[in-house]
View 1 (cartoon, rainbow, N blue to C red):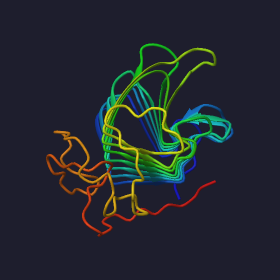
View 2: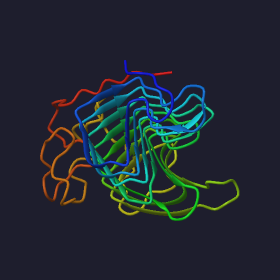
View 3: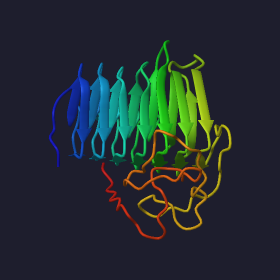
View 4: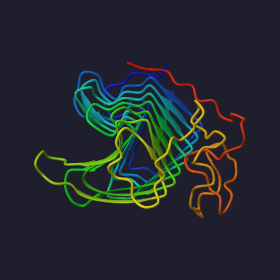
Length: 278
């Protein structure tokens, strides 16, 4: 298991850095703080940084704080960051109040998520998978492309307060509500812009679907790769800058699959080990 620290980030803390790459790490079992409120980034905390690439990491079983906090797996705060090809599994925010069990984004600088598997995370308040949030203008900004966001409790993606979110080719399945927008302060309407196009949604409720949504049973393997007959296969739109999937397999122009994985027949090319953490 990973280390236990008090404050900042339990795993990796990047603050005020430029041109940083975090790749190929296993970040498991960390706490951002113990016995405190509003800690962030149980696995990784990125703050006031630019040109940060987080790729190919396994981030599992981390906890932002026992009671309240942001980003059980990763918190990105006011940073130009790209999170791609990571597995964020079984991370948690505080049980009383928290946002973003897998990833919390609080950044007026656009943050990009692509080819990530974000699964079995939990949050005390909302955004069991991903939370994009600011309490006032200017808006927090996020771009989510070809991610698989699955089984993260009550909400897959929560967009809260002031936020602008672009969603393309994602799979969001197995939640109480797939995508939701909520107020930052009770009684204050959210100022939210969600641009969703060509995503697969299969949740108890899907009040926000956007354009060309596919609302069908996803037919995924336990590792969340598509099975034969999955509606995710060949259903995506081309993303010119995203030419590979999470496993390094090429994406076919004109026939992108949805989610983090391209379909490779019945071969399970990446095992996804999920452990429940409490």
